Image (tube, rainbow, N blue to C red; front, side, top):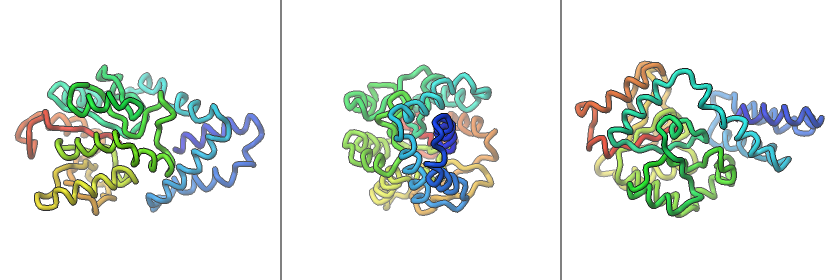
Length: 259
């Protein structure tokens, strides 16, 4: 979101309108830079960013394109993506709340979002090998989830919710790079649902943290696993290919979620 604020400020300077939007810019930056910011604080910042990018009809799509269209070209270290490719070759499937298309470009897979219910159904059945973006991806700005209103929309989307509930009920999901994001208004509610559903069998899904990373979602029904550092994530992921490293099911029941 910081990048979105920078993009808007650069655009506003060209029209001499920075002062007009200074209050929202300063408040959003302050919230995003606050290490103790709550989920509500981050939603407030997101609401302000969306308000700013709605000041002109082309800003929202322009920012997404500016930020993500050529992102893959600038990825110097593909170790994690290479590990995901190996997991995919052994049956893992993928969903991400990121707006970028790094996974699908590296793995040569199509993206899907809530704009195509038929594709979601095929993905849910395992008939479509794709990267699911429940919060949208950059090429389809109208379905990108950012503000509280957007979260309300995706929580009310029956096709998205059915797909996510199916995955959580039938797969073993590993959340990577999510941190507190897994407690957002969409996934937080889903994790509470699956926790209640499986309360007599214990947590069935996992979240990966770096060794010294604080766990911000202790209230959710997740098994917490750790690796030494960011540099070790790719090797940690590849260790999942060893049956002795998996706690339940086969690799074909594994779902990778990137936030």
